[in-house]
Amino acid sequence: MAGESLIPVLEKRKLNMAVTTPVDGKLFTLEQELAFEHERNPWEAQAARFDLAARKLNLDEGIWKVLRYPTREIIVHIPVQMDNGSIEVFTGYRVQHSQARGPAKGGIRYSPDVSLDEVRALASWMTWKCAVVNIPFGGAKGGVICDPRNMSQGELERMTRRYTAELIEFIGPEKDVPAPDMNTNEQTMAWIMDTYSMHMRQTSTAVVTGKPVNIGGSRGRKEATGRGISVCCDEALKHLGLTVEGCRVIIQGFGNVGSNAAKILYHKGYTIIGIAEFDGALVNLDGIDIPGLIEHRAKAGTINGFAKAEACDRAELLTRECEILIPAATENVITSRNAADLRCRILCEGANGPTTTLADDMLEAKGIFVIPDILANAGGVTASYFEWVQDRMGYFWTELEVNQRLDAIMCDSFKDVVSYGDTHKVNNRIAAYMLAIDRVAYTTKQRGMYA
Ligand code: GLU
Image (cartoon, rainbow, N blue to C red):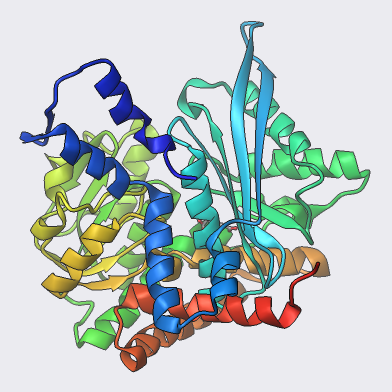
């Protein structure tokens, strides 16, 4: 199943390129590069943690096999008429890992880096994430290989609608419920909802979550992942006997997750000393004015050039001293190549899969308190669950109701994971996997194998 991500290194070998590659000023041999490709394969990372947790749970061998692989993997080739009249064909995926606990649930991402192994891993993570916060969903993920930054709104709309049409019999409120992820948003969800509704000949709002509020979206959904992260930070400080006062935070990523986490933490009194984005990074040891930065970014289109902070190196920022480091962008940000240099007390994983398995061991040796992705960023899918419930009832809650229910679930889940880890003498990541796998395995066994 793996292998796809090896292509870049194998290509280099075929092309007889240099056997060493400079990364951050260091040189690596081709063998080291090959090992690094494996380290960064999200599917391998997911499977390694799954195997470890399953072994510790003494999981039944048959159930192990059932839960280790996705139940369905759909590959579609999406023809799109581009604005200049030419036709482009995009490859898209939807992987459904499990529907044991309810309809499959998970976002759709648009990126040139999407691969089947990545979508597989993300789909499995959704199963574990929904089980950690104990909401009645399985896990799925979708992705389309494209470069949304270089596509017009019209091209994105046509691609989204055709992708939806290709998946029409596999998605639905009781089957598989997509949501936003990297480079997709409320508008993307509105197009999916509309396309699905047109095919069904009825308005079907509960087919996706993360929609605009006026067409069945939930209040508080957009901020929910950031809000969940802030609750995890509050709980981690309490657990470690630290206070919000003087708590320095560095956030990598200033998209929907990172910027909302920054805003909420700022208003709770945390000192955000650093923000890193794909095109630059900022630091201010006295604390960055986050509302000011959000305003600047809205005008300038970038965080760069913000007057009340200094520009700094993106990679170096991650290794600065702070209480909480929040990777909130993409996979493989903390690897065997920088984990030893980290100087945070708490690593709160806003992104999915930001830490590699090799880095896990290094962080544990350093005593860093990790709030694993399948707990830390579960606020988003929890609010998605609220949206799905509201759509099916046709009755909508106030933002306060959404936030109160979200805070309660995040707080309880944090405590569940930490106490599970204490009881079983495992770190937080393995505790979260064990808790989740145990819940999914129980339901899978209870439903039995349909032959
Ligand atoms: N894409 C988000 C995640 O990775 C949200 C998924 C959802 O709401 O279904 O958790």
